[in-house]
Length: 251
Image (cartoon, rainbow, N blue to C red; front, side, top):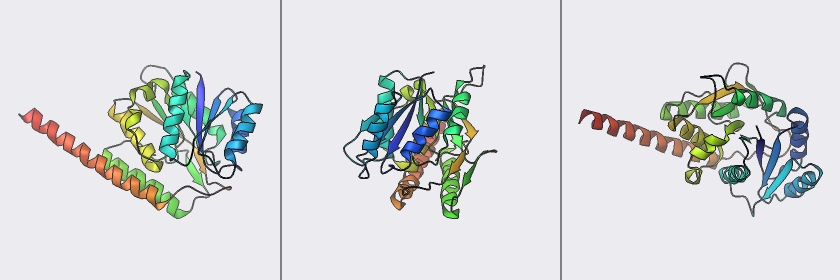
């Protein structure tokens, strides 16, 4: 399957070359699309230089910092227009290990009856998964965010906020991507809920998430607030739909 790894970047000049080197070793047949938001530290320039050296590396430049969700939507559109079979989300900061990518792709490629998945999540919170060098409050945010999304949206997924995941082409084609305006954690939750609401299947495989050692985290209070607000709103809408369906059946 032709596979494209979409890597959004903003000020990842130090970590991006290491990620691409790792992918060349552990997943040498995949292509990579770097979606750079006009990084002030020159990440886009570095990406262009690396792309000239490696035909599997491509770069999509955007005019400014427009957000993670917009970057992924642009990357998805680029991939679908070029007929890739599998599209992968992956962070540029080194937190997602290249050696874990084959595990996701192997799971997605399973085609025995009843075992195929439309979306494979790299999960920190299933047996075999974990995090390295994370402060307690990051664990609390991640585990707490997953628990809240599970309760509000009825999701039977262990790690809904993780950003290391592999989609089948057909999965993205079935999603109304133009309607997805969320960012950060909220973007990841939004896609999982839409996949499940479309009666598609989600599988999880264990990964090890490593806290970045270079650059600065993009996590912010506004990202957390957006996730709390939108997950709450979606949860209310879900309950209203269920209530209306119950009334319709009774009538």
